[in-house]
Length: 482
Image (cartoon, rainbow, N blue to C red; front, side):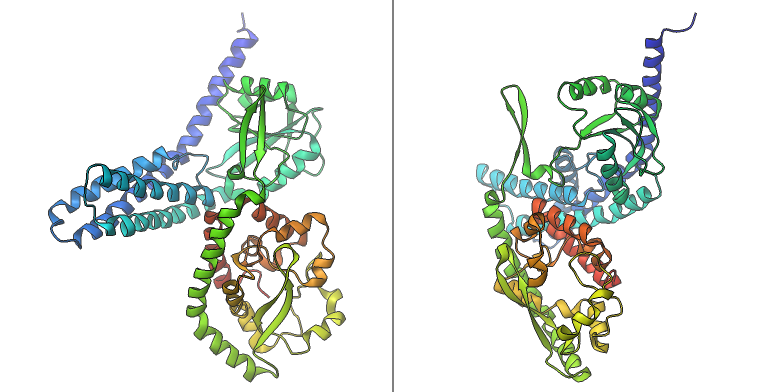
């Protein structure tokens, strides 16, 4: 006699789980060993150098350095910094390492006060930040290798998208666009078993009731539920059914692009309610960001001053007109200000704009043109490396702009904004931003707006640091600059 259907399904689930675990282990275990080793080595080397330069500590240098490496990795593990789901996500990793550094400083302070120990201040105020910085650099290098692996289809999670056809299209497009997050969409399940025609290469594997079996048969790692079709009691039952498969269940809420940092779960009257933090509740963080912008902006302006001076001289010698160009822009909450740049075009560039507007290489409200005839010889060079943007550091110091934020629109662009786009200016405009490091002038208008809104809803110090770093890479390679 053949085995009952339930036994066959159970055997299929066990086989799927073993295959899933083996596939995860093939990339995750070697990768996590490298991460742990790099984290420990960062702490050991930094602490060894600090201890070696202090008097009367050399006999204990090796022991203290090894303990620092062990303690640092244990703390990172406790903070969830080795969680598979966080690997490859820059802001998440930066945030966990930063929190761990704060915890170390706090613990050392408590230990010093409780046991009356005189800990060297340099070890606390210098060594800990250096350990965190070395850890971030090591993780950044390994993350680049992980992203390259995911781009080739390895080190990914087999993903099933469940929901209405219209909602499925958007999610599949997003996951494909950001392949470095590691979601490999292997199929979809819809209420009717028919999929949307514009999701090329993604098969429909079943209807909603067949999701658990589809997961087992296809060794699915992650199930992403979108739309309103699976919610409430059906969603709850789906989560129960997936418990035995070992697959993770994720729900894409209607709050698109809002991260967990600004969303909290509150059980109320038997319901799970999501509370979304209002921008007004971030006043303290906005103040800290403003102070940090002015300090860093002043330092960067001092460093950039010689480059600005040489470039200004080249601009004047190359073409008639002033070295600097002040342009009216719209800032936070619609406040106008003058944004300063090195002049990269002829003096009557604004007057000539109407004649070439139709030749814009960009869709939407922003005008960009690869072979803009108004750009001077020197202007083309300084735009290639974004040197023309450096005077905006003065706007940052003045408080008109931030180092990171949406780009400030021209008044004529602002006048044509619809309601959703106005939200770009809920924060100060920035010298650089999320869309600039995601393609700069090569991105379509709608994608630029989407990225700006994502930044407004989710900005954090870790995200700002990542954007500044990516800006440096984009400028060096000249990607999207013209």
